[in-house]
Amino acid sequence: MAQRKRALITGITGMVGSHLAEFLLEREDWDIYGMCRWRSPLDNLTSLIPRINAKDRVFITYGDLRDTLSIDAVVAESKPDYVFHLAAQSFPKTSFSAPLDTLDTNIQGTARVLEALLRHRRDAVIHVCASSEVFGRVPKEKLPIDEECTFHPASPYAISKVGTDLVGRYYAEAFGMCVMTTRMFTHTGPRRGDVFAESSFAKQVAMIEHGLIPPVVKVGNLKSLRTIADVRDAVEAYYLLVTQNPTPGAYYNIGGTYSCEIGDILNTLINLSPAKDQIKVEVDPDRLRPIDADLQVPDTRKFQAHTGWAPRFTFEQTMRDLLDYWRDRVAATNGAFLNR
Image (tube, rainbow, N blue to C red; front, top):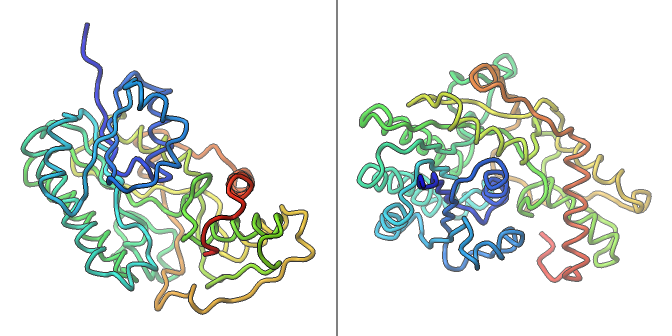
């Protein structure tokens, strides 16, 4: 009997990693190795815990992007055919207060992963996840943003993702490894972390509905323009990336088709609530970034032409599912977490 293919997902406990693991289990017969830190919360893996405990095609392995030896051990153990490098310090606002940690985790961490693969599994098909934040402050005349748009990062996080992107391409060109990088634009949905604007709004609305906080949603900059994709569409895109004629050194912009200002996202979430007539909006200075990437609209034709991918989830469905996710979490915990 032929051995199953193996996929390594770094950052499996995140929103994208957990959805990707579920998607791959349904779509393929691969074994899934998920890398996480020993202290990572496992909430997003609830549906997978029985399989993890039974060692039924899902295996958790512990590593930290800042620890070279642990990364080497993860790759040596998992011996992956496919790698989805999603793990990162992924919060732009946090990067302003922890820039060195962000740079080390995201740039040197990516180099550690690729070095370990070079030693143990250089023939793997590898996805390195950069970010649309690499483009930063883009002038209106350059919209929509294509792959050749100049990088102008607007945060230490964005700078770290420029490094991630370039490190990935370097290993493809220097060592002939099948490394591809993606710049995914805003993507959200169930399990989105509450440090991101739209998820913070949804959580606050859910807490208001349960009477846990006053009917005031605190916000940051509502004028930034974003194109929204659903996380479930994002993971399908990542699957197609590594299975549809993977091309060493290729880089792609991926994103949704619905563009709007952050304020429109807020209004959509509020209008989904029975408490909408009572809810007020208040700007919280702590939620404002020193500098913001305010025009994030992608040109995804290159990726769509290569893979045939197209988004399936509507903006309205994504927002409804995000709000329902937070309603369920608030109900289950009685709001026992920070209102951030």
